[in-house]
Image (cartoon, rainbow, N blue to C red; front, side, top):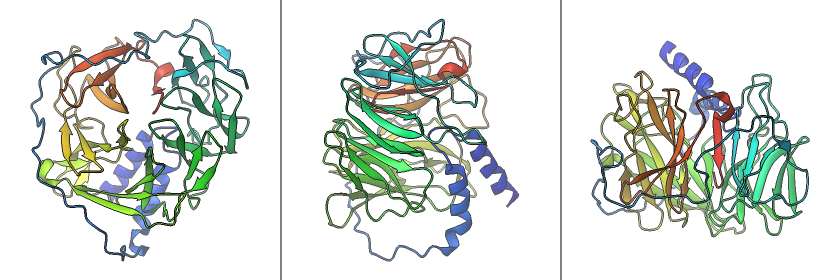
Length: 405
């Protein structure tokens, strides 16, 4: 039990502000209360998947060894330069131009997040609301087309059109989950009310529909399809090795029963690997989800490590194909590790940020003082290109949210 308590303490210490307000507490509570939850009684339909080859098991080639074209993202800048003085505040209303990304230092007392627009302007967003523990109630978000910005402002969560005057307001504590690929739907959750269902916002009409039948102790809303269906992922009840993913597709505008999908990933996992607990990412066409792979911290007990790194699984939601996407080796100095563990010292690791039409967007985190970078990897070829060089590592860009993330 002492080992479990120590691990839960690490969870709380490593929890990302903005993204996981109250999450560490909910995880701890869920583990204590799991004995009170009855097993799911309904017989879930299991999607039968054909056998497919495992793609890209280690060792992987180093960056630059492939002859495939290097992917590029033309709407991201080649370098993110921080202003010498604080940028002007974002006007509360009116058109400012489509957004490109938001960056922030989310520690208590730090400066507010900053928005970078397509025309190169930078704007200071409103002061984020933080708890006594330093966790922000919510985070900013940009739609995939850069038109819509969600941010905490004056005790409300405001989703506004950066090219016009339309705005949608939500209660304090509302936080974004995910955008649909075409920027029509935004899935939101209430960080203050654990019993409140997720809400699907139609930014065109302003219609808000709750996602029905969501027990937030058992299911996590993770994405919204182009059709408007919400994607729910089963939450592991215990910190054990996870070898499958269980998904439900729920239409908030229909009384139809959820569509269940279950994927067995044991054929694609080593005995020392597990499906991670990071939020899966939806492909731009809405057909596939991207899950992370982590090394198991204690194989004898099946407990996953608390770490980014490893590879990714691309799971097709329509045909059931599974493909393993290796994350790249670093092209920076320092000994690269195939799949970092929290116990290992390393000079770099990659962190998936989003799934763009050009490929999977990664943040290369470094410890060599040269600064991080945004990279994009083509899942089909493994080709990697550096898109944006970030300033030398510092708190100002500790978090970065490109549009669609």
